[in-house]
Image 1 (cartoon, rainbow, N blue to C red):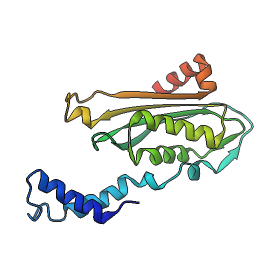
Image 2: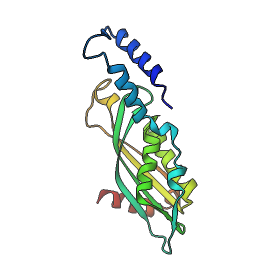
Image 3: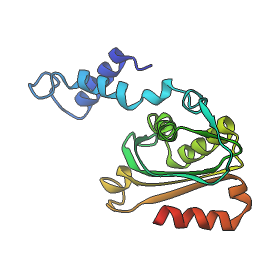
Image 4: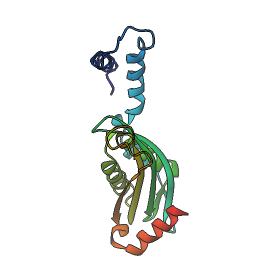
Length: 185
C-alpha cells in the first residue's frame, strides 16, 4: 500500500533538490497529485494474479487460446521511468480456460509495480502455468522504455522484446512458430 504522506514528503524533497520552489503556484499541489498517481500506477503491488486466474471454465477441446495486443504501462525499477507496450499471451488448455479479460488483468497485476520487462514477462507466464495448469504458455512483451528514449542513449522508437515459454511451448518449435504467426496477423 502506498504511504501517501511519505510520497508527498519525498516529492517535496525531490523538487527542492532540483532547485524548485515547492511553494510556487504550479507546484503547490504537485506532491499530493504525485502521491495519488503512485497509488494508481503501483496498485499491482497489492494484487495477486491468483485472484484473476482462479475462476476457470471446463472445455472439451484443447485448442490454443491467444490474447494479443494487451496494452500495458509500467515503471522501470532502475530509473523510475515508464515503459509501455503490448503483451501477447497464448496458452494450450488442459481442460480449463479462463475468461479472456482475466489474462489482461494478470498483465496489469505485474505491470502496475516497479518492474523490469524481463521479469514481468516471466511472472505472467509463471502465473498462467501455476493457476491455469495448461499444457503450456507463451508470453511476448514488446515495449518502449523512456529511460532509453528521453535520457541515456536517447533512441525513441526502439523497442525491447522479451519472451517466456513454458510447457509444450518451450519444447515445440512448431508451436512457437505458430504463436509468432498468430501474433503478427
